[in-house]
Length: 558
Image 1: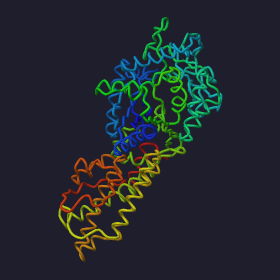
Image 2: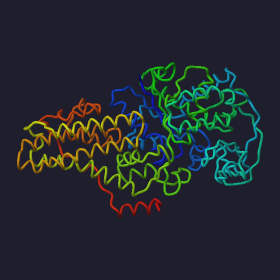
Image 3: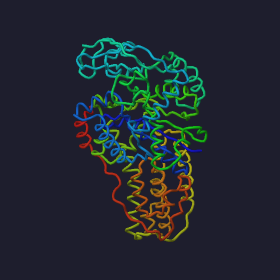
Image 4: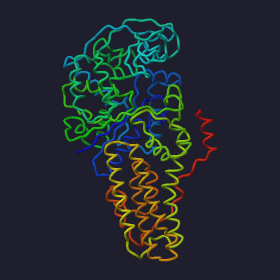
């Protein structure tokens, strides 16, 4: 079995926030790293989502051509993700030639199967802006829940899919002008109504999906699928290969998911790999998607309908891991509202591993979760610094000061070591199970419990006391603990890879010793007497109360 992993494509209009990271890219990365560690063949694909009006407007505001704006933003985002150690096998762009080719191919396949129709539509035109307004650039009051900042494509409050003409008191999101009118324009529509039974049959078969994913899929199916426009009056996007549509492009909701396929194609062309075997007639591929809940309707309904409508054997998701919101002091993290902490800011505050661990420990899996600076402080200080980092610091510093920078010889493991190894095997089995099931909060809790086991062991065995009484027995404890540090580094590597790499280097491990699976690393006698090591710098710096107060003042945490 091969494993294909995709995370929701981050939009091009600026650096993303912590909510974007925890809701898609980071859990996908942890899962990909774990599977690779288990010896599986993994392909982790992502890309920037570059089409649509937001990109046009952002480029206009910066005085750039939209293509140049997107190129710059792509490079900025790619750099940030690299600094967060996201291990994409390929990070592509939806403005690529591969995207144009495949989007037009999917459209033509749907058209040949009779699932495309042309209609005259009523669209909102802003007289003040002198342009048709795409759905998301019309704002107003949601007719379903009364939210007064609903967009014309979807209400982010109740998640109901909308049309701009559904909104009460519509206005331009570009200028705020209410001087808008409805004008006629011809567009192409995907006949979702005709594909509803196909989609429902597919969703019915996905019995192991998370409750969040299934509930949102059935919500849309039960409300009844309607034909949905796939073209827009824009210049920036994939051109529509149809006479009379030369001044239109494909709507971003239609072309964006195709970015998973086009990025894989670009990866194949760059590496010489057989990209299509991952997507076409790919029965030997297990495909998992990661995204926040606002993307679930498009990935459980719209994108599957697109694939099913081609009547071709394109790969569909085996599992869709949906996440709830990460909230920030009373509201969800938001790019448009500039609420929360953005990824470039986060890296200025603390190293990437601090954030990776804290976010996975707080992942909004079963319900929305709240970010607070006090929570960040607790996770860093108590779990990373005290429970994990302090154990490593105490053991390696003590060993270097008493025995030098090599593992000491003498003594044989006894009952305490056997009990520790058994505990480690149990904790690692639990950790592996949680990661296989994509239960990230439970996985970090189990990882923390594994770290606690080592602290409990040295509290009982007290090598600093043994050293004065029985150096051979102290040597046994030291060798066991250094092997335990190797296990900790391997077990933590999917979550905090930079820290794991520091420990691999400090222990001077071979490639084989670094690349062990977690379960194999529970053997606590692999590193023998005489093995050299170095004492690494302190792994985690604590965050004091004054710093928390500064961060709350700077980023609005009240």
